[in-house]
Amino acid sequence: MTLQPQELSKDLLQVHNAITNNQYPTKEIALGFTRFVVSFTPQPIPSTLVEIVDFLAPLVKIKSDVGIYEGKDVVNSIPSPLFMALLVEYLSFHKTVLNDLRDAVGKYIETPGSKNVWALLKQIGPSRVFPNNPNFPDVLQRDWILWNLNNDKKELYELIHTVIENLHPWLNPELYNKIKEKEENTRSNWMYDDDELDAKLQKQANEMLNAKKETTVLPDDMDIIEIGENV
Amino acid sequence: MSMIERIGALTLGLEKTSTPFESWAGSPIKTWSVTVRMLNIGELADISRLTFNMGAMEAAYYNKIYILAKSIVNIQGNSVATQEDVDAYNKEHNLSGMQQVDLFGYKVLFIRKWTEALVNRLAYEYDLLQDEYLSQHLGSSLPDELRAAVSGVDFSAVTPLSQNTEDSDDITAPGTVEGPPSSS
Image (tube, rainbow over all chains, first blue to last red; front, side, top):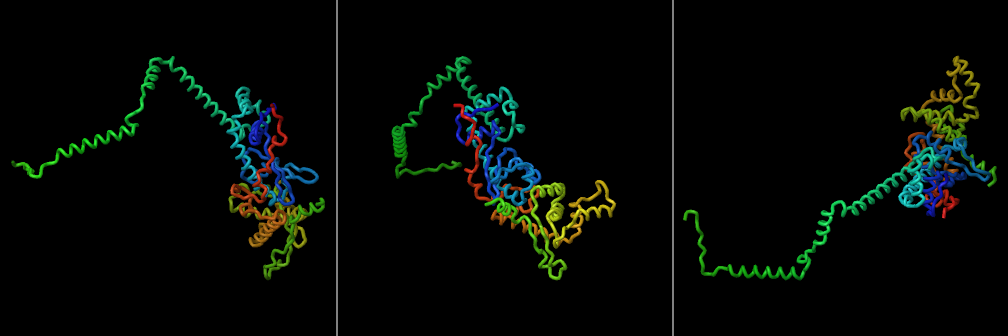
């Protein structure tokens, strides 16, 4: 099955091709007199040399004036230090492309092309949507599925919320009326918000306090008598 | 560059004859010449398979021996070992079937009997050949962590050798140049 992409930008088209068509970016690497063409793969890079050689064998081609050489025997015949230098370049290329593709998946799920493929995947299953990918799901497809599942959940929650909101008047009309009434009766604290009135009230309060102080001052000729316990 | 020139350039530094024991004053092998060739990655992977289950120290020791067994082409212009030597050894020790040693096994048997100084000196000669090859071919040297890269190397911190890696525009996306036709 060939999936047709919609109008997509360069990075989104890369993601589309990677997820749906197993087509990945390539890069030409020149090391001295030798020119290599390497292809990206979303598979993780192994850690041992034996596995790395097997891993890179289908991804590396040697370019020359007379043609392109590829295959396990060709890769095995590369001088070991040259292969190591190529490996270092490949690791950098792999990291860059993988990061770029994974970053773009979040944007890609919003495109009509992605939505169509996702709807199809849910209906007929991955074996029919991605028949040529024995490693399904690879890291990009896993990201894409997770993004879509989250998106589906989000849409479902939004739908439930809207439905409940709209059902309120019918589910419990009495409670709904009370809520509405309360909303209408909610008033602002006008006294707190009015600075002028607040200043005026504070001034009045200070004047009252001062007046009270003045009335409680004792005359100079008045003695103060302390009353002891024994008296 | 013509193909003849190109082949010459591509194979530059793949084999080297030197006198590695020149500094060994008084040694009878002081003037001996040794020819060492560069191993390809397939041969290095074979060595990695042989040392896979060994401990780190043992693997490092056998790694040197296996590399020498495969890389030493001749000493003083004479082949290190011939198939006739191997056949004679098998016959002398009454080895048959699976017990028989092959040419590589025969070389390993005898290199194991060499002194550590001799093994280390020739292993160093092989390292020099690698460096020379890289500097002639790439104009750079391998990072230290890759010199003895046989297994379990962490490549994440390694800096790329060429400069064009940083230029992400080199990356060709399938579909961006000859992509599937748009549905619109």
